[in-house]
Image (cartoon, one colour):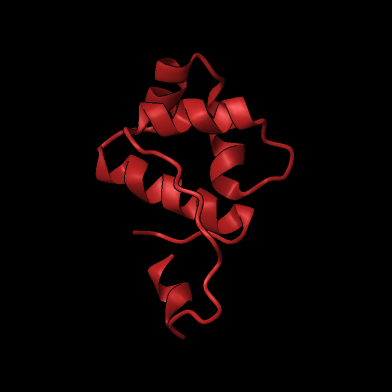
Length: 82
C-alpha cells in the first residue's frame, strides 16, 4: 500500500501506477476525457485539483482511494517508498 501525505506524493504514486500499466498521460486523458495537461498537473502535485478529476484518474488506473487514520510513526524510509 502506498501512503501519500502531500499532493506531490500522490502525484508520484499516480505517475508510477500509470507507467506500471504502460499508459501515457495522453492515454489516461483519453480514458477520463480530461486534457493531458490536467493529468500532468495532477502528477506534478499542483494544487487545485478537483475531487472528480482525482476519482476519474483513479478509476482509469484501476485504483481506489482508502482513507484511514494517520499513523503516529512511519518508517524512516517512507520517502523512498513514494
